[in-house]
Amino acid sequence: MLHVAIIGSGPAGYYTAEACQKASGDAVRVDIIDRLPVPFGLIRSGVAPDHQSIKHVSRRYEAVALTDNVRFVGNVTIGEHVSIEELLTLYDAVVLATGAPADRPLDIPGADLPGVVGSAAFVGWYNGHPDHEALAPVLDGPGAVVIGNGNVALDVARILAKTEAEFAGSDIVSHALDALRRHAINRVTILGRRGPHQIAMTPKELGELGHLERAAPRVDAADLPPIEADAALDPGQRKSVALLRDFAANASAKPVDIVFDFFARPLAIEGEGRVERVVVERTALDGDGRAHGTGETYMILSGMVVSCIGYRTSPIPGVPYDKRAGRFANDEGRIAPGLYAVGWARRGPTGTIGTNRPDGFMIAEHLAEDLVQDSGKAGRAGLDALLSERDIDVVTFRDWQSIDRAEIDRARTGSPREKFTSIDTLLGARPAR
Ligand code: NAP
Image (cartoon, rainbow, N blue to C red; front, side, top):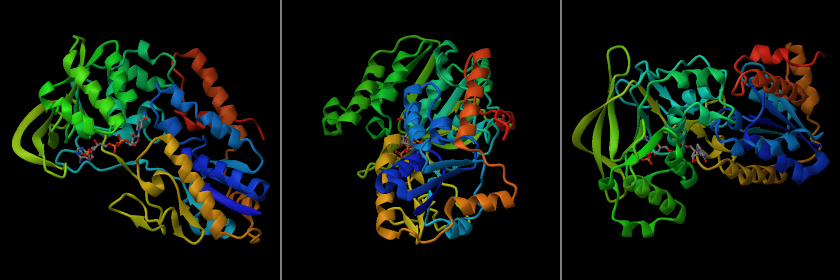
């Protein structure tokens, strides 16, 4: 028997479990440990609530979770309830699939003013993540600035711009929907420090901005390179740039403007006790495509700033960490004997959910190469004994299913689906033991 502990129950964790199952069949036991009582990580708290088709991938993880050789162990925090060292004595392999839940810091003056939030916090807030439910973002408008030209910036701009009706069928939490319904934002400026050819926005997500009820995207045609230059782009990027060209050509009048401000880097955020404006410097690109300030500055009036400039993995004491890259130091997923990293914790916050699948399969191959069967480690039985000794109230996958049913029942009494806004209430939804 091979005993594997995976820390983190998001896509990277479940794809790794699936790969272990495929590689070793009944000769492996996998425990997926999560600090939350509910599984699926980023699928639940990172994917936008109006992107339900993406969230459906969790059904595949559920199929893995309900097999005998994979188990979900929720409500257990590494470093608090059990240490990595202890897990390494109990399991043949410990795989860190902890993602990148912290915002990359926005290192400019005023970034700590009330009204400036990172995307991890803002996205967590509208998705009901318990760490961010108390965020209470300032939504009194009239302007909002979103920093970054990636898909997260698009998610944030779109969520700020949608009407209540456009959230039908989503699983946005009610505290966010209530706040968004009442907000007074009529201009969302998306700041990109480079240009249209350098965006990290995929066509499907960008295209959605062109079909919003009360909001329209605005692109200044002067920012677009000559159309012949698009031929050098890869097909996906060419499609995205074609959409920006459409936005520049078709400026329909709607109550909310989503303004793409390219070649614009934030220099400072200012205001009396809260965000009131962002000081921006015009940039130009050098021969390597890097942005440099031109010295020309201007102000954007804004009541809130959401910084969508990427994420970092949270360090774990004793685990080697690459500070510059913001992830665990590793060689193709190997950290130290018996210790591995997968997904964003391995490679940083890039790629789609599906990118984690080959990552998981690579780790399963490493395990097959590096480990021997029947090492005599205690595995699950050892963890159960340790947690029971420490009086830790573990949540299993069956418990999670009853939590999920309770959420759906509660959602029937209100409009959007309420998620885990109160962990205690949800834990109360578990069947008696
Ligand atoms: P991202 O794709 O890496 O984009 C980060 C953006 O922030 C880039 O435009 C970057 O500009 C900019 N940036 C970085 N540091 C900056 C600074 N100091 N000042 C100003 N701008 C700065 O990251 P993301 O949007 O967080 O997305 C993370 C991953 O999740 C991506 O792979 C994304 O595709 C994926 N995702 C996918 C979906 C979806 O498929 N629906 C939704 C959300 C996220 P430079 O290019 O100049 O560095």
